[in-house]
Length: 385
Length: 233
Image (cartoon, rainbow over all chains, first blue to last red; front, top):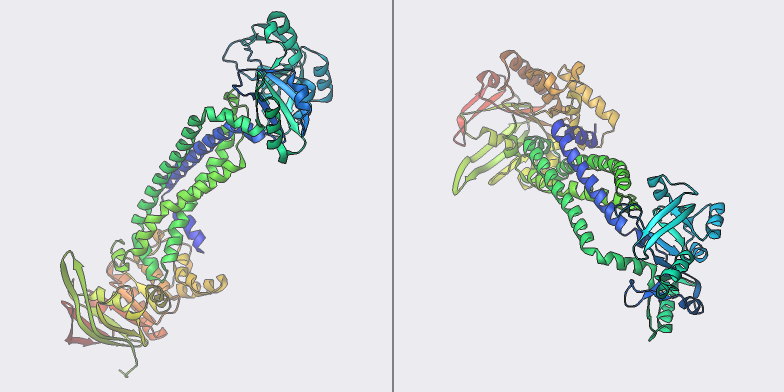
């Protein structure tokens, strides 16, 4: 026999109470894990951004376009390696409920600039050759049951009309941080059509995506680009891809902060529940702790017993909660793939689950331990029987 | 009886409890010597201070003033940590309600004091088996307290008290919760511990039959040791 065995036996002395507490901790950890994953999903674009890419947009707002003619000028700026561009299309598939990101890009440069978008060679070739072609992320393909060769019709909002696209490729992310739910097509197709229907809006792009030769000089290159278009009709605002993504998040920061607060409130609530359990346990066993002291066990041994029991309960709950988080996240991801295309339980979330559980276990045991250590043996022994 | 060396020396011992603003004196100028190998019964009415005196000798309570020397060590001057270590090495406890840990088997309960020693698992097992055979419960070592009778539980408690080979055993009403037959068995066992193993036993009891088993009976009344009511068996 050793102290660990005694802790384990003590932990399951009141099975129903322990099981209910473990379930409480597991549900709290599950809720905490999912909320943290929602926050991670919010920042997914930031996580996926590359340090070697810049984004240049209209300095007034992203809503305003930039001239196509900037492409050549940007390419000539020192430190620029590659230039691509894109335009938000905002087309609707069936109705507004079926939202997914869809935008037009210059395909060849775009695929070079984003090697994390992986397309089979034959599909890539087919995509590049067909002006009405689109490549679609794996998640969208699975969600709508599309296949190569299908013609998809989107209803234009920013660019009115009905737009037909042929699926020529299905892309996958190189890793889990890549959004696999976008619909990407040729900017030329958009521009050619706009030339006929709204010539004033032709030869304009939403933003430029710029690859730099040295990520350490990204800030200098961004400054040079903005300087090149200073006092022009469409001044640019160039920033790193990460800053660009963070700009989007800052618009919804209040929601993110609220979710963060709720996630910690969940932990605080379960801390109170476990503290209550441990207080009841210690109060019931105060006589036993007195017996341990009588036998020569010191304050540290008593602390070890109570902290050990508290940690045993919370860590079992934590393990169960973590085990439940993954299938729950899968269900969550399938149900809300439109809003959270990247919904992966990050390692950091698991570490936070574990740290939160340890803190809950330790804090819950503090008061009962203090009480058990400080009670006089003679007083404790009077509570036996 | 041959004169033996005192294992416990108590001089000018005072103890009181505080209840609100009131101070209640419990022990008043106690002086007592207990010889090694002696079986002493402390008797007296409820509230006379018997258990308090026993607790002070066993180092589980603190005196207001006075000296308690056990084997030459003044335990009133020890820190809590040192006192805990001292208890583990020198005192075995036998309680009225046995005070076994319900989630541990008889073997594990007896093993508890040995967890504080540097003994290996194998050595601990040997010690526990010897202690349980001493109380004739070697065949019940895997039983939990709830599966044992009161007498058997008290025998397990005695095995736990002697397993670390302490010089002194303190017993607080050890037969108080037992039927007559079981009480007799426990008292015989305690007599054997004195005679065969040379243990010193200090027992608090209300039961005259239990006290008759002791070598010497001392009486406490209102916190004072009655020197005139000292009985030798």
